Structures are given as structure tokens and as C-alpha cells.
Image (cartoon, rainbow, N blue to C red; front, top):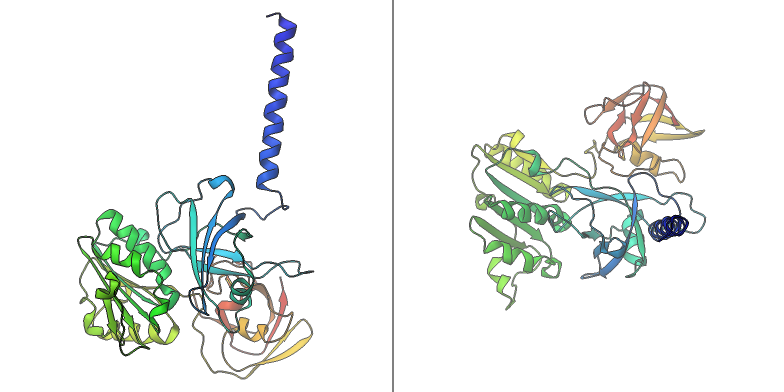
Length: 366
Ligand code: FES
């Protein structure tokens, strides 16, 4: 072949590669730009096993692999935007179904009566829709601890990180005991997976149903069922090398942490996932001024106070002091931190989800 013909052929090949790259980019980013670290995934399954629970499975276009996650990590999920809404609200949800090389993400979400995001997701999502999600993150993970065995305690949708941890432990041959408490047996959406895990050497699983005195089921996993609350005596006693992970509602968690403390569990061996910082229920009263509005704080976090007035609250993605999205400027007054103050905050800034007033305050958006 002559040199000019080779040059023309080479140029055509380059043009073809360029066109293919443009096409691929168009496919992946068809709906506009996303913030760094965010992506759009397709909802391939969307089930509502009870009037409160939403089970979602998400996949990338073309089934491409997704970023790996550590068991116990969570995703930020943006609610589908309403017409005219500049930035849809976001919330953190734990990932279920751990695997070292994920091609899907799975979430189990409870529809909260006052939940800005969970209600929109539960009421509006359909298979095939695209959802915007952030990268997996969070430090609530046994992968960050030295442990020779795990005790996993879940209440309700708190099972999502615990299922992931049990799957991770089983893959490593690490002994674990998992205790899951729900109100109704219809909520036991991962019973089959847990039954399979319970067959592994070194595994123990108990499923507690508090709202049904008798549970009739012919499923094999019925052998794991217990009626009534989890008795503390069923938990293994504390011993060195054993780490306990807890994800449940605030009342159950408070009871369990107190009981574990009294039973001799070292605080450092008990890890709790909380998507809200525990704030005093009452306090003050203190005046809080923000964006020319006057409020009175008498308890709860600063964030909950600001959320009581439309348009006043900053966006709050994790509600647990880790994402920084609820930063505000403190113009005047003193606050008390409910968590250790993050190092990377600019002088004069606070996190509304992690602070309460220690005096009258003047705040401004960042
Ligand atoms: S909401 Fe994430 S730090 Fe406050």
C-alpha cells in the first residue's frame, strides 16, 4: 500500500476512535454534568415489600463495574428533583450485599413519615429511572478494625450494613454472630441470604420479631426465628479481639449500649452507625438569628431548629458530622459541639448537625 493511502487510512482510524469516544461519553453523561465523585445509576429493581420498605438495586450503564466498598459503608443518594428545584435533597443510606467487585449496589430504605428524601424515593421511583449517587464512604466498618470475631446487631433497616459485614466476614472465614430485630416478619427481606450465611462454619444468626406472638413459616429460615425482643443474655460475652457493630433505632441502640456497658463490654469495642448526632432533647432557651429570621432553641440540634423554618436550613447530607454540607458561619455567640470539631473547618464555621447553642447566636449561610 502506498504512503498516502496509509496516511488516509490512519486518519480515518483516528477519526473513528474519536467518534466512538464521543459516543461513549455522551452515553455516560447524557443528562448533564455531575459533581465530582457523583454518578448516575439505573434502577434495575425497585420493590416495596411493606408499606414502609423500599428495596433498590442500581447498576451502571452497560453493566460496568462499580467502585468497591467496605462493608458498612454508605452512599449519598439524591432524591429525584422536583420541577424548578435547583439542588435536590440528599441522604445517606447504607449498602447491603457486600461483594469485592460490585456490579450492582443494593439499598433498603425505610419511608419516614417526615422524610424529605425517603418519601420521594418510596413514592416516586420506578425501574429504569436514573438516580444520582455519591461514592461509597464512611468509617463504620470492621475492615478498619482488628477483630478475630464480630457481633452484629441490627434493628429494622439497620440490617443493611450488618448483612454486608456478615457477607464480608463469611468470605474471610471470620466467625460472626448476627442478631436482627424487626416488628413484623414481612420486614425480614434478607431472611434467605441470612439462612445461607448461617450455614457457614463459625456463623450464628437470630431473627427476632417483636410484633407477632406466633410466627408461622415453612421456609427453612424459620429455624432462625424467635418471637419477642433480643435478650441481652443471647449476646456473646465480651472478650478481647471481639468487636460489636450496632445499627438500629435510637431507643433500641440506647438500651443496648447501656446494657453492654454494664455487661463489661469496653466502649472501644462497640461501634454504632448513626445517621444523626445525638442531641439533648431540651435546653436553653436561646435566641438564634439567621437570615433575618428569629428562632428560639429549646432542644435538638441546630440543624433541626433551622429545618423547622422553610428555606432556612443548609443542605444536610449525612446528618452525622462527616460530610460538611451543613456548614454555617457563626457571626456571634457560643456553640457546644456534640462531636469532636473537624480539623478542616474554616475559622468561624460550624456544622449545624453537630452543634447546639451555648448562648444566643447569630448565624449566616456559608
Ligand atoms: S449534614 Fe453532614 S456534616 Fe452535617
